[in-house]
Image 1 (cartoon, rainbow, N blue to C red):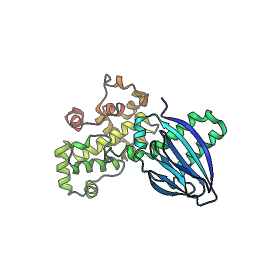
Image 2: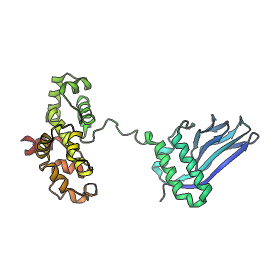
Image 3: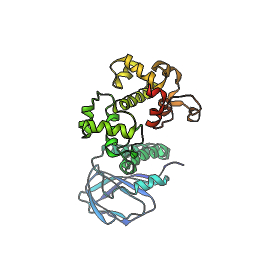
Image 4: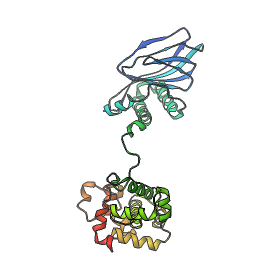
Length: 306
């Protein structure tokens, strides 16, 4: 089922004496102003629309056009149905007000209208795709509002106290840089001695060890998925010395970087169902299966304690 079904696309021109009386319908209408100034009532609230403004009237919400302040107005309109109930719920949460200064949105609407003017119903598929992208963009903040933006890629940090979470997030954000303990402590606003002791207490490894865990985990990901050279990967992960990088990679992953690249040539195309049956290290499994790392697993492993 297509996410969007386009019902009608048109350029509407109205003279000053015309109005569109208050009404509602069981589909969505997107209006984009091409010329003129007028009043648009949406759910009993009136807005003054000008060129390049656009406004979305959700299904079931009353709206009208009146009070033209120019000799005429030109408005592009797209009427559509959203077949994806989840997307529809997000769209229904959008503020009932004009969207201004959004050139990307205006360009998308213009493209949809232009293609319909040229190709008619043959533009249905592309128009639905353009409009779907636009709606997902407009609702991005709503869709991700329930997700904690302070989340870790590698570990479930929610089980840790706030200071530990801050340390994890700072290391993941700055893993490619030099990370002296003084700098970390200053940026997470903790006393260095306290920071080190509390991190070891809750995570089970030292901050220095965890920095290497993050860096080598990132390196494994780059080796499997990217086309970067091993030297560039080492630099990107904060290692100036390739020899030092190779030694640490061997320690944590169990094989050298070059062998890792040769062993997993398919990388992103791996069949997840087969990964669990393959003898991979914690690092490689976490990369290939898109899983988080459990520090306890690393702490208890013989390789980590070497």
